Figure 1 (spheres, rainbow, N blue to C red):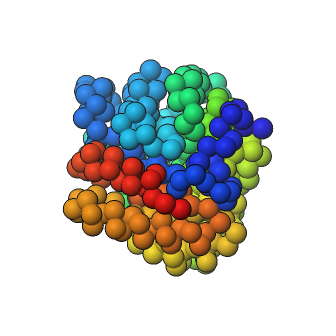
Figure 2: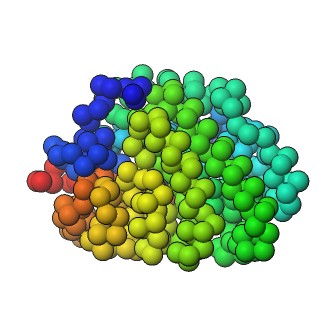
Length: 345
Ligand code: 1CP
């Protein structure tokens, strides 16, 4: 059912299904980006959103870490707010800040003013994914979208936030507006994933980076049903679904139940504690991203512990427990990749 049946037996896709693998597959969240000198070079004078809408640049940037590290999967170069931009929301991604929304969403009328996403809004995504699938050969491509809560936070706060206070105020105080907003975003995120898979992506990851701001009760009541709708639509495409959040040790069971095939675990939760919480699902993670700044033998010893803990899971995809930190030495990530891929299973 996937666009690339020839990749079915890649180590990455086998691990997502919990099948035996020749080696533990490894990729890194934010493997493309500011840690790579070749990324900084091609981005010179080109804005973040402009880059995401330029298929040639997206192909080049997505390929850079694959060439350099030989990772087992590529992650599509884009951003979780790109589909909002594509439907006409006035936003920018500011260097050193992140996504900034000109007119934050506060009322039902604000929500209703946001159009739904159709493939015609993102022809450059289809073109970039098609180009990539050709270039990647035997390496699967992971498409991604933002989960409704995390995307809602940018829309409601108007930019990055630590407390997500206005977002949660809407969730607690204006349930009808909240429900409409979450339905709107879940439709956009699901449609965005469908476009990527239709063009050839072999797996998808739903990023709920800020879900750790929620109690299990509020996650389950106000957020999970909306993420579940996105994951259900992605599931109908026949590709594995990875569901990742930060600071979510008390949400891992629910995040699995939301419809994930693979639960992404951030670095704060020991992988061994996470495995029993996700039940009959694979896990992804979760080396502390700062360990790449440690001496190589310290980093690899910890990576070995992560791989050992992953043996208890249905399947294990090695990753960092959040994105690559921009000051990371790429040579150290190269050593980490080789260590994971040659670790005896
Ligand atoms: O100019 C630049 O280089 C800007 C930095 C940057 C990059 C490289 C941003 C702004 N986005 C991206 C790309 C990006 N964003 C990818 C690329 C693929 C890869 O991994 O190689 C992905 C998967 C994302 C997803 C994303 N964007 C998330 C979820 C993942 C996570 O890190 O938790 C989030 C929360 C965003 C919002 C965002 N976009 C950019 C920044 C700096 C932020 C975070 C801002 C904040 O702290 O709220």
